[in-house]
Length: 265
Image 1: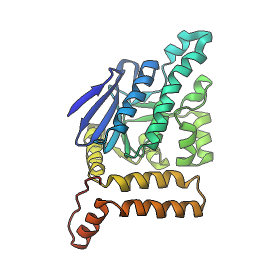
Image 2: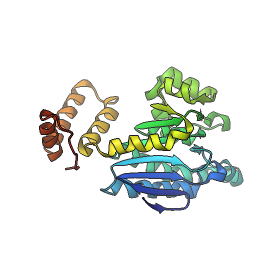
Image 3: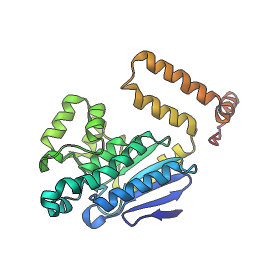
């Protein structure tokens, strides 16, 4: 395993899996300007690396990410807009790259998942949560609105009426309720979170990258396409897959009842 990145967002690489770990544990990984910039740099680095097959977001210490750095915003006083802009700008640039990335993304969630942390978690393709995790969108509590794509992801995951309830009332949601709502895919014992995430990431990393990228794009685009547009997109994506060696090898392996090996070409 290799590790790089800044001190506030560390990058760990192993077996085609790039883990981006938020690393301000004393502040529950609250995002300040330095972390937002480091997050953007880290996302750019791993998305553009051809060796990256899966991207995992995780947090150091007792929380995944407890929102934005409110201390920095308070300290800014009447200059709060400039402080917010310095955080949101690179964070949103990172989100655009992450959500458009061809690689599957996984959130490994524990402790507090609040504000921007909840927005980030909802934006990933899959999410695993420790059974002790607590979620709160939280923005309304400071007189603000969701950022980091929270207002885009939430109604798509839970429906508009429930999204409004979660955003306006800002009630804490436990891990099991989050799973029932569709905010996370799996809830696991806290002690098993890291190993369960690695297992899922390795399974994805062993899959067909071209097909995974096309599946991700098709499903995300489907909510904004009409049927005719989606059918056209499916046709083109299937042709893209059929042009790969992975497709041909996998078809042959299936017919021979063998397990395919996907090489990403």
